[in-house]
Amino acid sequence: MPYKNVAPPAGEKITRTDRLNVPDRPIIPFIRGDGTGPDIWAASVRVFDAAIEKAYGGKKKIAWFEVFAGQTAKDKFDEWLPDDTVEAFREYLVGIKGPLTTPVGGGIRSLNVALRQLLDLFVCLRPVQYFKGVPSPVKHPEKVNMVIFRENTEDIYAGIEYAAGTPEAQKILDFLQKEFPKEFDKVRFGTKDKARSFWKMVGATESDEVCVGIGIKPVSYSGSVRLIHSAISYAIQNRRRSVTLVHKGNIMKFTEGAFRDWGFDVAKKYFGAEEFDGGPWCRIPMGKPGGGIVIKDAIADITLQQVLTRP
Image (cartoon, rainbow, N blue to C red; front, side):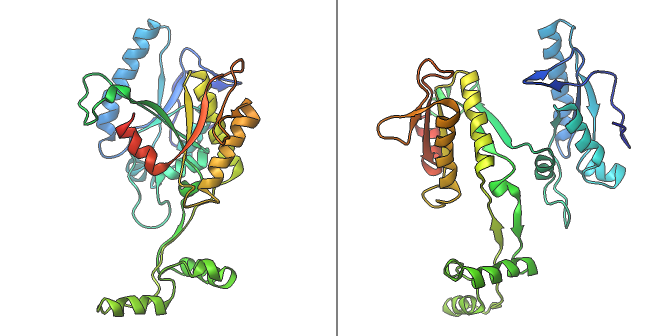
């Protein structure tokens, strides 16, 4: 497609059928980023190019396509996130970006979140592994070897929130008070009377205006299925031993708890996993792709603790 302010270099597009098809000179868009971004990029691109040269003996080479976002884009084009940038990532499938400045004031709250939402980048994939020689406070860092799949576009990353004291937040509070009074009572300081009572108790002279920020965390069946399916598929392809559904279902039963339950459903429905020891943990039977992989769950608090104590 034609671009307004940038021009792609000579090269070919990466395409996708059931997998990525990478030509010898793939065009890959990149954003240098703000702050330390240009310095990081200057060092990184040398490593990328050298690694490809060594791996392919000069047969393959990346055609880097610079696009812009953040402060640089604002300075150049008076836009924080130009359409050219979004379309380049969409057209060329694979891209890389540096850290981006969050705009101050209205409009886009986070450029990173905006990119995820616009491109539907629903998986945040983070390999976590120890490299020998790197200092670590953990007793046995060599045992740390995990891959984290985090939801990237819904739940709290949907970015649906309203600042305290705004008309939007008050509309949500009014709706809760009218339609769900029992739930509204759980909003600790959702009325002037509650706020006034607190300030009186502590002997402070503060405004009794309602000042409550509101956030909404949507967790869907479809979104959960695609994330968990991706994680289990990755585990099969990379011969991992288990997949753990990390959640706070003990507190948020209908969002986090549903995520957990749907995860076990995905394992059974799409991968043929079977419950053991009375469930809900399950295992993919031997003889099937991924045979022996255990699908289990853990409360987030315990997971974060055991990452350090029992890696």
